[in-house]
Length: 115
Image (cartoon, rainbow, N blue to C red; front, side, top):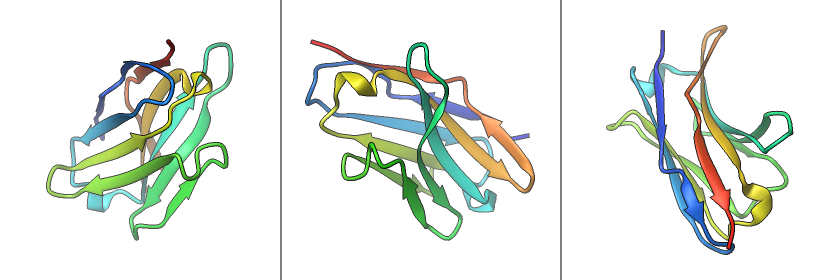
């Protein structure tokens, strides 16, 4: 079992930045993939960004060049740096970890972009 705890969400004005954190209960080097997904109001959950064990990153086309995913192995934490935020980025953001055939989710953190 892998526990994931997200933090860093909140209310931000358009054009602002936020950094989300996802702390894992195990050594993240053992996880095949970690990533961030989001669920906008009234919509389905969608991929935002992932990073593989080998460090290969993948981003949704809508956030390329705007968001950046990174890892800190010493802290067993994955980050999502979000810049130039827009109202369309408003969503609950979820951390995901894949360990073999298993998939684990955090509880989600709300990000609201509004003036």
